[in-house]
Image 1 (cartoon, rainbow, N blue to C red):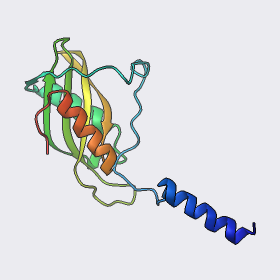
Image 2 (image 1 turned 135 degrees about the vertical axis):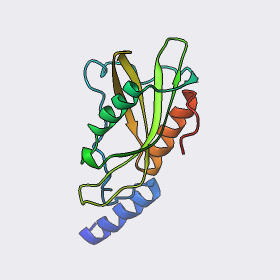
Image 3 (image 1 turned 90 degrees about the vertical axis):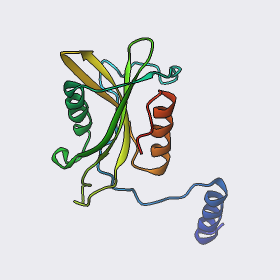
Image 4 (image 1 turned 30 degrees about the horizontal axis):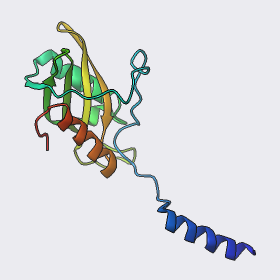
Length: 154
């Protein structure tokens, strides 16, 4: 098979397999990775829906700090709605919306985020679990928020 036919066959195979090569999308945040000591937590743990709770000013500040550290330009982060839900184990899941500038300087649309509040009431720490800038990750984050009992954020 010559190079041209091989290239055509490869393109057809990719199309049939649904593999499409696309240019990378420039989002306003870096990829989220759970930091130590949270990296070992099981990804397939069941989600328990909680009941809505308000966020005090310290918790809101912890969310802003926690999300901003994942932004490419932390000073450009702007926040929309933020809501939380506490499950029977006392874990508070928080979902909200954040926007910021991409590495090209463009302002990105509001993206949903999800994370959990850890630490103590006097020294809360917000650990980001995900930010949904692209359609698939956006759908995943919004689904996790609903399953966690967090009211609609969009």
